[in-house]
Amino acid sequence: MNKFLCNSKDTVVSTDKGLLRGFLYNDIYTFQGIKYADAKRFQMPEEVEAWEGIKDAMSYGYVCPLLQQEHPAAEVMVPHQYWPMDEDCQYLNIWTPSLQSGAKKAVMVWLHGGGFWAGSSIEQLAYHGENLAKHEDVIVVSLNHRLNILGYLDLSPFGDKYAHSANVGNDDIIAALKWINTNIAAFGGDPDNVTLFGQSGGGMKVTCMMQMPAAYGLFSKGIIQSGVVGDLMKEIEDDGRAIVTAMMEELGLKPDQVEELETLPYQDLAQAYNKVSPGLAKEGHYIGCTPLKNDFYMGDPVIHGFTDYAKTIPLIVGSTMAEFAFGPAIKGRVTMDETHKVEIIEDKFGQGAGPVMDAFKEAYPDKEILSLLEFDSMVRGATKDYILKKAGVDKSATYSYVFALDFEIEEGKSAWHCSDIPYVFHNMDKVPIANVEEAGAYVEKVMSRAWASFAKDGKPDTGQGLVWEPSTGAEEHTMIFDKACRTGINFDHDLINLHKKHGPAFVFGGQEVQH
Image 1 (tube, rainbow, N blue to C red):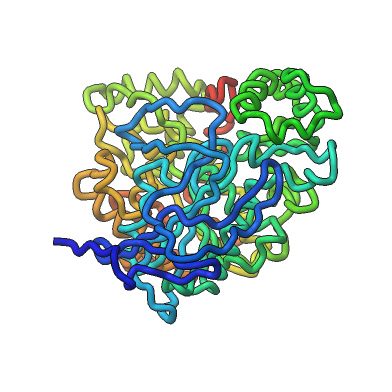
Image 2 (cartoon, one colour):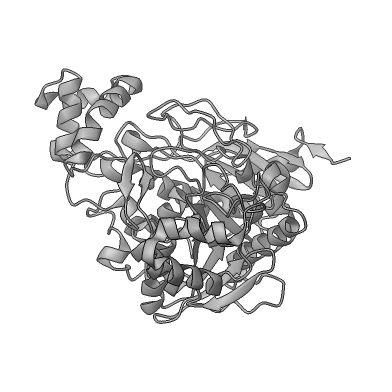
């Protein structure tokens, strides 16, 4: 039986603001819902007030309110949990193998996905940090921060008090990192060995922290999972005047009443935003809900260059083989003859079908040919470009990966957006579909080991004797995580280029997108 302990001095930790009580279970100390900052709407986060006595840290904190009601979907692929929402959402969670202040465990800080407008630190069941902390002897931290118009809406044209408003969601993350830097030693962690890791929007936030001077020195390494999306989230050179003015008009406010936005119910703001933002977006205006380049955030490094600090940060960067394979599995993988399969691919790729198929077989010799219909060249291509550019200016190592495991659902499905998360967190047990026969346990062991070893010393050791070299400005050295992991140099670059040239457009976010 696993030991559970919470009513003891052995689970109480002293922070700079007061005492916190967590609990011990399954050999891991857990602290949930630690308040790391407070903030007024649209303003910078502030330190919390000190307290007397012992405060319980055994319940998750509020998550940020969302612009739209969540709708459960595809739960067998990505199991979720939903939680009470409130603007007062600056909370973090800690899983640690030790509370000895001299233990100096590597610290892995998870930044959740959902773009910059949705999600939470506990949204996916796979985000739970206990197994990664236990199996890999690291400290795992996850956090909530302000999102959407609460965290990323530029009101700076309406007054100096709103100078940071376009990026206060990122400022919350920085506040959490400052809290970690001050307090993590008391939880057994090493404040000088903090690694940021995140998937999708969380990966984007890792890049943001590399480009925000206020975050410099608060972390030393980064892992970006499916967080380089290229033209799917274009940086717009604009300010918030158009979107804020339109929202105020919708709310019946005059131009000199901008401060009313600080006190109106959030749902009123969200309703107004949801009504006016689509039209402005079509006109090419900035509409918030993403970071904005300004004096506090140096912008997308692919466009504006990596900051001198970013150049010193070792990275693991990668994506899944089929980021957009959310829908029903492709029929006929098992029963269809090869001639019919080729005809389907020729219908999709036209005269380029032959070269595309040849390039796919070269890059993925063990994959069934219809998997080409799920292959993603957009995120994968943008990721490749990011890696080569970062490696070309590096004062540190940049490691590349592709997650390519096939899943046993219907007739088979290629690795989609989020499908790698359970393996990184050692949480196959929480995501039924992740339990791929034989291969699942192998990939879980390899990925969680590589991520944790990178957090410990900057070298992603898979524990399988595979040599994973960092990339250079000319060569992308990629680890392909699959039923049999392997490495390759520029292994799919021809495929990416041909797929972009000949592949059909697809619909993303309600709009047709070209590769």
